[in-house]
Image (cartoon, rainbow, N blue to C red):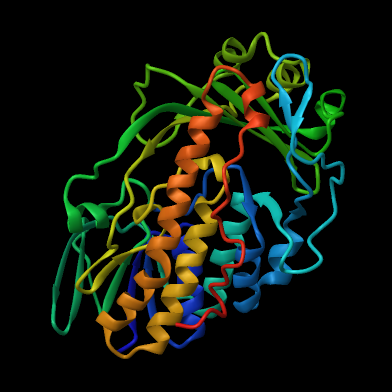
Length: 386
């Protein structure tokens, strides 16, 4: 095939794909709807499968430098602080030594590194301020028409445009997203302001009736990232992220362990955000002609396994390998789907199962239940035969 690829969406998945393709000689145009790049979010976990991909792309040393090694995530009773399960982690600054070790970082640090890499490889590849409106395709290529009237032509278009993907809707119509009845709330707080509330180590997951709060250190332990998940029957938010408040968090967690309440009280008042968790049954195909999907656009994933970014990174590596290996677009996309759809669908369903485990009334049941892991253990998107 000719090597012109249009990528829609410059998040972590789209940016990783762009780097992988540019390094293999593809002509890449990465379109982002925002006028200025601003990767929102907070903490992010990169397991060994993702680290190996960045190593293959020549980025592992830089990724390692922005990570803290993951030692374990213990679970504690929401009120008493009693240890329930898991592995305590008291090392705040150790970095991964080898690519098989997991790391945690701030999402914005990783995204910034990826965009910087793209600009160093091809300053013309990234185009901002372009929102996809329509796609046309034929036997000789695909055309993207944007809301600003601009047009781009290529041999393949990859929708990396998130859970509310325009590309998905152009391909399949109605999004079929379902509200799970759970909202996530997040905030960051400086570690030096909450030392007295960090005795349980770098990471701790507090499990309570119908809700939980996970916190861990990022930026070398200088910042604490906290994410709370809670059941609700009242969600009025528009878009994927809305402002929250210290008062809202304190109302939800007012009778929890002092370590939880102390974190909330010390966080900056303008730094609380929330979003609703939506789910969708796995697709049997991610492609239609010369258009395919990647990351959340293909497989929205609940956050209970921390696998959303990892699976987008895995998609990017496998798609780039398939496009390099096959001249025919159909064959390349068939290879991509063969290696990714079933694998990722299992993880989507396991994430759903973990949500059901967490969102029950008795926190003591959490340590007594075990779901067989079907994540990326033993799966290597870099070396597995195509």
